[in-house]
Every structure is written in structure tokens, then in C-alpha cells.
Length: 291
Image (cartoon, rainbow, N blue to C red; front, side, top):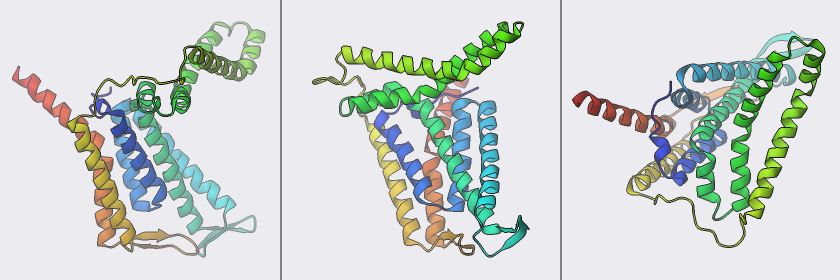
């Protein structure tokens, strides 16, 4: 069960900037503590948006993906000085395992961020934000966001059809072999139909009015300022400090006061959506209890 998403009611520009800042921080600052903080915070937010059970399952798959990255990197990369054992005459080092784990957490964080982004930053908000300036890009991006959910719905319909064909073995085998091509063909056909439809409606031609009717309000400005200040202050503290981790040729991690301050600022930044949602939940709880 999901809760009310107060963060999603803010201006699309603020929401987009938040996700862009979080993604940029996690990608550009390759730090183990920051990656773990990002994983925990984005998992909590994902579970709030998608539901506890669905979020926990997705987080579990992300952890399995982290383990897979560790194993694959240790098998294909042999740098490092701390040799754990020899496999086929090639060394398996601790440094490669750690580097693979950090890479896995980076990819897992990115998937969690994009998962919540896809749920909150809907196609309507994308069109509202970019349609006036980049009409073709906004249309393509909004279609890309809805691609995976649409594939899931089409696949579920195909599976339902497949259940009714299980009694016919030959037909079932033909159906399974053509399922992938049918999904791709249906997706391409829908995309082509939408593109042609929008073209003949005059989309992207001449001046257009914005479909975003809600103005940029005071609370949007306050949240925007908070995001910019936290991201800038955290990045400044981190890059001016001596904190960081070197994996190759040997592992070395250092954290000073500047790095610790950056971790705190980034943690606060990552928890902004949950703080807003919890605040609204408590507000409504008090209102209901007073009735």
C-alpha cells in the first residue's frame, strides 16, 4: 500500500531538478559511504511510492545485482595486490571485489532513482516542462517513460492468452516463440501511430501555449532553494575535503570533518521527499483525529 505523495504535487521543474541533483551526486562522487546512504534513502522512498512489498522485492533484486557485479568484476578484472585465491591461473583480488560492489551499488542507486522518477515525473509533467522549448524531445522522453509499463501490460495480456492456449501444445509453442517479436512489433506500431497523430495535430509547429496551468508558487521556490543549497554545500564540503576512496592499486579510504559534513548534507537532500510526505501524513492524521 502506498501513501500520499506530497512531493509529486510540486512544480515539475522542482521535481526534475531534485532527481537530476541526486543522480548527478551519486554518479559523479564515487564514494562507498555516499552510495550506501543513497541506496538506503532511495529504497525507503521507492517503498513509499511503490508499496512496501513491491519496493522490498525490487531492493532485493538490486542487492542480487550488486553481488553479480562483484563476481563478474572479480572474474574479468585482476588488478590489485591483495590476492584472495587463484582461479584458472589468474588472481582474484579483494580490490576487484570491492570495486565491483561499489559499481553494483552505483547501478542499483541509479535504478532506484529512475524508478521513483518514472512514477512521480509522469509524461504529463514532462510535456509541461519541456514541450514549449523542446517539443520533439519532450514527446520522445514521455513515450520512453511509458515504454516499460506498457510492455508489462502487453506481456500480461499475452500471458493471459497463453493460459487459454495451454491445452493446444502446438499453438502454445508457436505463441511462446513469437511473443518477443509480437511485443516489439506492437510497441513500434503504437509509437509510430502516436508520432503520426501528433504530427498531423500540429504538435511542435509554431507557437504553443503551455499546458502547465499551475504557476511557480512560493513553496516551490522554497523547496528549489533548499535543493540547490544542500547540493551545492554538500559538493563543496566533499571536494574541499580529503575524503574519498582509492581502490587501485591498493585500497585506501579517508574521511575528515568536511567529508562527514558532506555525508550529512547529502543524506538530508536525499530524504527531502520522504520528509515532505511524512509531514503531510502527520498533518492529515491530526486533522482526522480531531474530527
